[in-house]
Amino acid sequence: MTSEVHADLTAKSDTAWKLRVYLLGGLVGLAVGLLTAYFYARVSEENGFAQPNRIKTMDALKLAVSLLSVVRQITDLGAKRGD
Image (cartoon, rainbow, N blue to C red; front, top):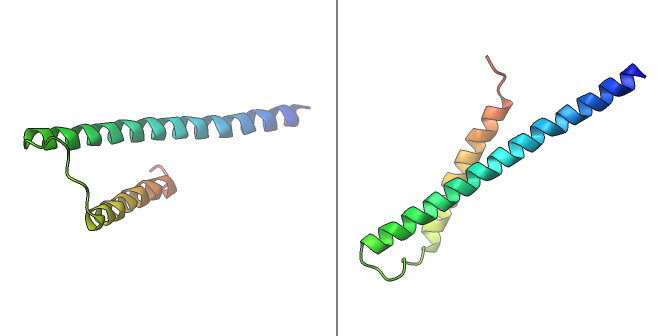
C-alpha cells in the first residue's frame, strides 16, 4: 500500500514541476513577445511611419535562425546538471 502511495506522489510531483515550467515558459514568452511588438511599433512611430514596414522574407529567416539558436541554448540548460 505504501509503495502505491509513494508512486502516486512521485507521479504528481513529476507533473507538478512540468506544469510550472510550461507556465513560466509561456509567461516569459508572452512577455518577451509583447515587449518586442511594443518596441517594433514604437520605433516605427518615432521614425514617422503611419504603419510599420513589412518584414522582408530574408529578415524573417534571419530572425527565425536566431530564435532557434536561443531555443537550443535554453534546451542545453535543461540538459546540464546543477553543479
